[in-house]
Length: 94
Image (cartoon, rainbow, N blue to C red):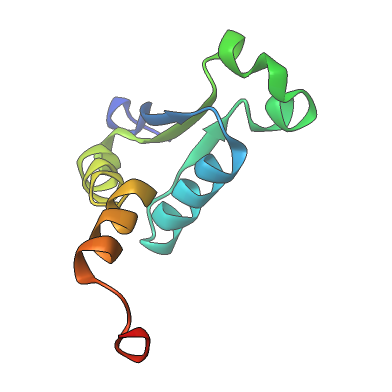
């Protein structure tokens, strides 16, 4: 990182490791460089999560908008359940 525009900016934080690592994998899949701050510490002692602000997902400033757009487009489990209920039972169960 050579310039001020490459400063690392937090785009999200997570208290559960699987959520943080999934989000990192999503960004890496889109070729967005990212870093999970506190990962090593919290992998050893997850109870420190609240104290340290959780797993902090950081990206270079030049990727902030793109990263936030990707993370904001994710569908929550609650939304997926609501969509499944609205669709009704599968055809073979009718």
